[in-house]
Image (cartoon, rainbow, N blue to C red; front, side, top):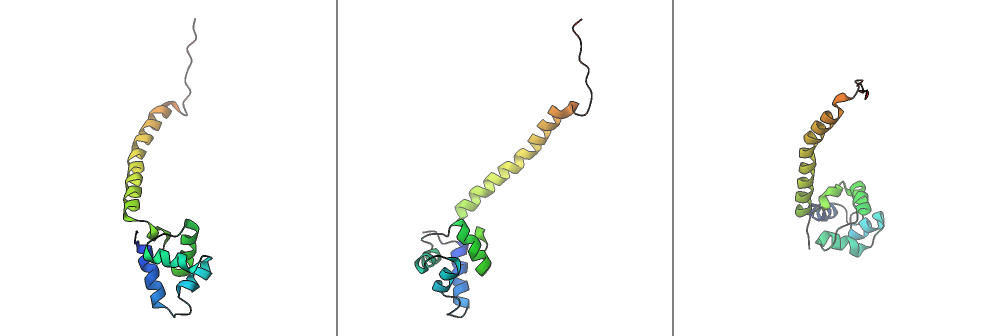
Length: 111
């Protein structure tokens, strides 16, 4: 079971509204899933699929990234940091390769 920021925020969003408009059943109907699916999301037993995360964002304002676990966030941050760190090396390598770009070079003829 992974209780995420998304599950906590969905629980709070439902609790904060009128019972008829903000029930698990109402959320389920609005985004096209079953009420037990919404209950499982709130409990942290499962998490919504990406398309349902987007629908939940429209309905509740909960960002799709709020459903990621801390472990997933750390892994993503590590990967993004790695990509960002490799960019200066890529630029340096490209500038060395392209140092003759835009200049005419002479070919030596084998005489």
